[in-house]
Each structure stands twice: as structure tokens, then as C-alpha cells.
Image 1 (cartoon, rainbow, N blue to C red):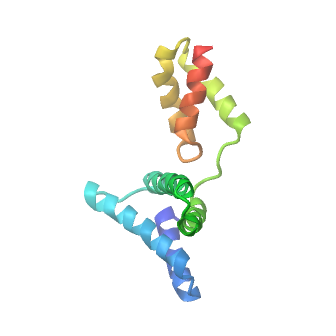
Image 2: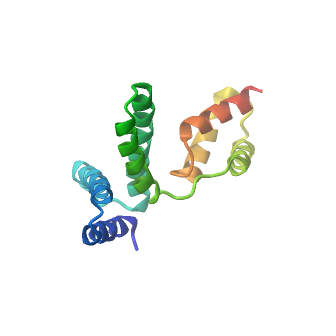
Length: 148
């Protein structure tokens, strides 16, 4: 079953179950997916739906950080609940060992020797780790590896 269809089924189940906060989060996700479909005039595939959900998860994490800094525990709780619902649709995150192996493989495959080759390495990793790793953190690791 396509991911978008799964999210729609989960929305129906949340409606039937009376789960208001879960329903609201799922509706937000579907609205973001629909908005991108309308903007680009295409039907999103699973990879594109994952990128929309990944972006929403990143937004929630940034909001949590800012709300914690501002002492807004009530808003942190709401964002954490939304984060839990959205994260359920994302694939499992890569472990540090898996990520290091992927970085080593990408460096070897691209023949990277210096920081100038970072773009090639990141392109190879991004294709394999989409939605399964924070690309900002991956970039820092690749940069450290190529600088050493």
C-alpha cells in the first residue's frame, strides 16, 4: 500500500477511534502532501511523501528546541506528540555503525581524497540514506573524515 494511502487509512481510523490529537497531526501531514502536489501539479510517490514528512519532523524538532529554550513546556508536549505520530511513518534511522559504513563506501566509490570532493560523497549518501539519517549530521561526519 502506498504511504499516502496508509496515512489516509490511519486518518479514518483516528476519526473512528476519537483520537483528536493524532487526527489533527495526520490531517496536517495530508495537507502538506496535498499542498506540494498542487504546487508541483504531480502525484507524489512514496519517496516524495517521505521527504514531506521528513521536513515536518525537522520542523517539529526545531520547534521543540526553541520552546524548551523559552520555557514553554505546554508547547513542547504538543510538538513531541506530533513528532511521535509523524516519526511512525518514517523508515528506521540508521545506526552510527551503518552510517559510518555508508560514508566509507561512498568515499571509496567516488574516489574522494579531499574536502573538495564532499559534494560527490554527499550525493551518493543522500540517495541511499534519504529519510533515514539527518543529512546535516552526515555532512559534518563526511567533512571530518575528508579533512583528516
